[in-house]
Image (cartoon, rainbow, N blue to C red; front, side, top):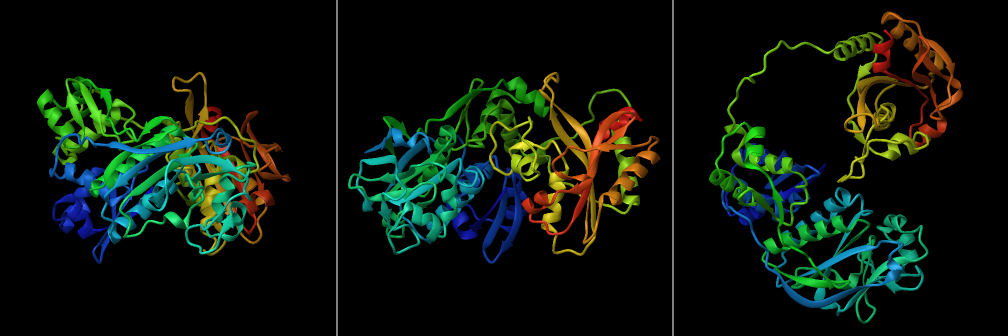
Length: 543
């Protein structure tokens, strides 16, 4: 998630509505963004990853105009041809093949606009753009260069230019070692040739995804802007371009199209999706007529006619009818739904796995461990690379919006190591555990995967060893009614001679041991750590 800051007066001006504290703190969060703070005329909100269009004050204000009833209905963005071509050379294909572009003219840039542009770039790069790997944005003063532009790959020592934030010419390799943004060179350094965008006179606009040229730096004197978006996913690139272009359009800029490799961009035509009114009514337990649904659609900036919704081009999150239903619920107002008792007979009771989980938690607390909670969503780096494990098949997100959350965890222990990493300034020893769900691929399952309840445990101290936790595992399983046996362990996350595989009645249920020093180094943890992880579902079955 990303936290964004907006100047309240700027937000009010763009929203065309005065904001009192009640609106800022309590009403606006019902749009789907968590209020963080309000201090000295600046308000902060946490934006969910599925709404990158809210990362700029312009996009946020646009959503508020609908949500607060200032405007209604689908806004259609008008464009005209800029007459500018962006040519794409084949040399770029192996490095960073995707690009799109637009022009925004006659925009009045002030301090608020500059700050918003910088924040929008930064937040998209960090979330939607996966630290610039998937998407990177360049914004340029169009009047400083001359089209047509060319996107190509060059030898890193071939081209020199003055990068933004510097006053000295550097080639691409030198930027990687001498410029503050040089860390981003790692995205392309595995290739022989690196990407640049140049104008007709070979002036460098950008070295994506690393840094723009100082020549095209945007200032309050800028009137006409050229936007480039590069990346590895064309759909994501186009979506990011639409968000940036329409945000500047909200400031009064005139959006113009660019011929990008022969295709006209940006495409700001609304998308359409058919959603049956009965589907909406059944999920929301309402009885809306077509006219009411049309009004509610207009209240979120959508169009609606006879079962078809028109979705604005900056809404990158609407991928399924359920997304439409969620927005209709927001437009209707969560506080307006009436509570009712479901017409379902029966008496509720706890599932066996839940009762067993509670018993395990109580025992772990009794053993002197503190419970923590981490997220099910994580990434392969945490689950496998840092754990010195070979990558395994996992439940992977198809449209991940952040590189931090791309898969469902298969193991709990990596997430617990991250907790220890973040708490090294606390006193020792630290003894933590978590009982939670992990996800395993199961081709026989209806959805191709299944939840598994797992217990993860770690101790960190100046001196801890295998015996410290093996005894806890034995005691835990004994209290639960069975005996544990330990055999040789092959998990590379542990030290081979100081770890074991845990068996109950001949069934392998988990592992225990001293975490391998290489794993601790990967997590930047300096003290010894011992841990175990067992499959609670397998324990239930065996007991």
